Image (cartoon, rainbow, N blue to C red; front, side, top):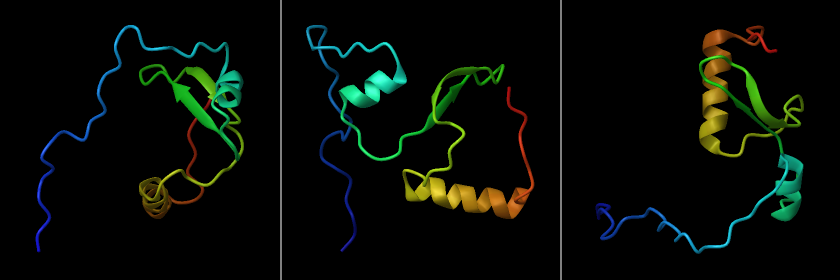
Amino acid sequence: MLAEAPLSSLRLALRGADAPKLVVKSANALVRALRISGRVGFAVTNAKTSARIEGMTGNVSVAPASVTKAITALYALDVLGATTGFARD
């Protein structure tokens, strides 16, 4: 049996203007407000300038959040090598 396309869009419906919004002052506050458990780390940078915009425990190694990221990391290690680094501010 072959897989068939879904009958309707899998995209989430947009929330209306009257939907409640979560306003937080920092990434740490957001993690606490959403009650996310485990080790959380991320970095947001400007793609043009490489300037760091926001981040949280960006210097701590954590397991990737998905298999795709793990495969990408393995490919990068294979192609670029383990000693390749990137300049950071």
